[in-house]
Amino acid sequence: MSGYPDTTPSPPIRARCGSRDVGSHTALGGCGRMVIGDTGEDIMRACIGVLMSALLLVAAVTVSGCKSTGTGSGESRTGDVKATFTWEQTGPSQGTLHATVIDPGGNTDIYDGKFYQVTRDSRIETLGGLWDPWYPTWGGWAFWGPTPSESFVQHYTGHVLANLSDAQGQRMRCQFQLLRAGEGMKGGGQGQCQLPSGKTITTEFPPT
Image (cartoon, rainbow, N blue to C red; front, side, top):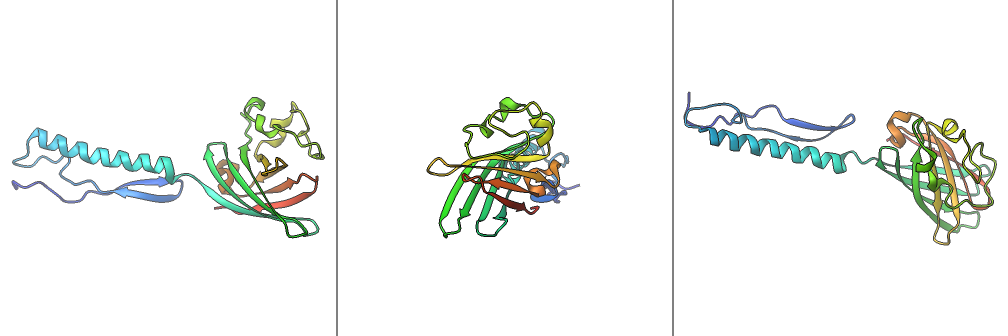
């Protein structure tokens, strides 16, 4: 037995985001190991310090470590309209989507807005942004017309949907079939977006 604190490192406390290891904290073996010369107050103080550090690590991972982001691309059937996308998951079933669209003349338009992941538990009242506002040139997509359909949630479960706006108020809507719905957008997806003109571009989002 020694009169000095035991500073042998114990296994690190690790924080993970899915399959990613995003941080660790190594607690000193002295927390909870009684040695000669230590008082109860000393041990309590050491343990509290270790626990607070571990909790701060977990909190930091919760706030930022698991915020998913990714990119995608798309083009029209004739290849004369191209688009690039960036997305960020900000909640369990929603996030933001940014699209840059280049028309046949080389002009660039930027669209932004919120996306919604539809699940079997989704409710129309929480998806109102998909119709607000409705663009009159849109058409041709089953169960997604100017007003919500009773079969909308059932049909689009496992999809991500969005109603995006540019600086002039023009709208572009998107629907993506998720490859791995349990992972959200980071699991990848494929689909299409409909431009203000009514023209459609095919889109692809690789897994991240």
